[in-house]
Length: 118
Length: 174
Image (cartoon, rainbow over all chains, first blue to last red; front, side, top):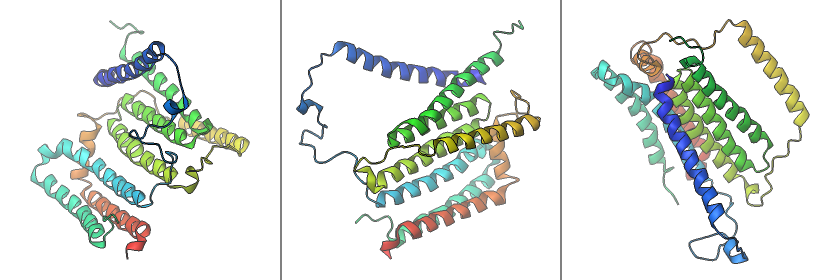
């Protein structure tokens, strides 16, 4: 089993090495001459307004919850996708039913106007 | 051929030790760094190393669940919860660890209890699960045949969660 995921591990090592090597090289090569303007937050060339750590709009939380619920649904889709070919039409109908029930919930949210951004 | 230091089990042990070390180090950082945002990110690293351990022990479906649900879902919710609190803008959210000693005592007791359960349960480490074609395939097979009803009921539970969340969070749109 180790062999199957060895490639993933090698990718992990390369990705980490690439990041660290890039940062270290930049640290060694650059010259350091900071001033107040350079150290201010970059905001598309404009003067930055306020801090970056602001309180987010509560409405974002609603979408985060929606995301988590459909994330759980994907957990069920994943083993289904593995055996779907062997089981044929029966599994397909089951999944349509499963997704249909959840689409009902999404339709409810849509109808109630929870998805609208005002 | 049966060289004890070059068989797969030792490599598995090595990987396990690596990810266990990362897990413990990041778990300690979660409770010790001052910035609560960094805590949340270290929690993601901790969960990722637990997922890696699941993969090492052939529990690939659990590993996928760990990555998708815990790192994808729970961390998103935690980050949102941090960003939504009003005190974040005034930078007042700092980890203080006021109940340090009580927490250490509770952790020691929990550790003792879990060790007792694990060592008396007769679980054998490093035993390959007896399934052919991988765990995910078996889970899918069972979910689609034997456990059809729980599977469909799960979608109803999700529907209830969806509508419940909308009713609680999106109140003002009535």
